[in-house]
Length: 286
Image (tube, rainbow, N blue to C red; front, top):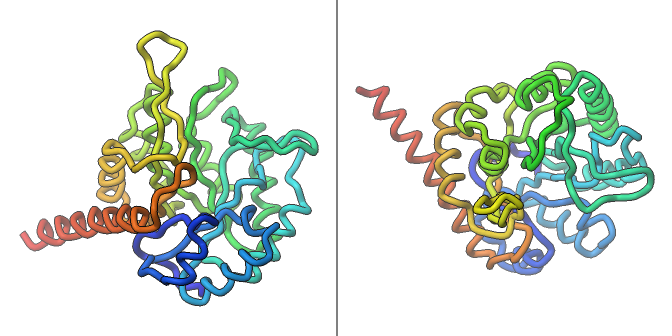
């Protein structure tokens, strides 16, 4: 199924796969990490079955477009095979790096925002898009450190990526909340500066406050292990008012709740966008 979704969807993790296949709940669409299915033939078969009913989005975690040594072409070919099998509506990945040589690191590591980095990431995005035959959506990261060598803001870097590669953007609203807290910038201003013409998908996920090295301070970690915080809902509403509603994904990867809880979060997101649409219609009528 290749129908572009309009409402909210949920992240499909293997723990919920059998229940979703059996019950077929009214989820708007599903997003998967393909790496969870590439080594599990039965799970891949069930995913292909679900793709006949639900729009599927593929959110990669292993392509690593920010790695200076290049992307893993064998892994990219595996992704390509799955993409051809399920025909997803979106294929996305992170503005980060996670490989060094032949080693995969279980993390999404930050990049300096410079012209050199821009050329490296752009070349890798071009290769990914040429291989898959689809636009690649780049997600803004959750940030914990910055680089003195950066010569541009993150939003400017993303804008230049879109201009150079014609890639699209996945705006993770909760990542903006996390980064704004950790890095000390204004989250609303980040949304104002974001290259909105590139946005085709949004994410919402939970974060976990942890004690920082500075006494009395907290660092927020993008764990996807909790319900979506009120601050994220507030910024989501601001974003929808600013740039309009986009297909929005509820992410929950750790300490997974019930499938019903995920569907309830998606319904809440739908309620936010519906209320804003009514506000706009009322204002126009007046």
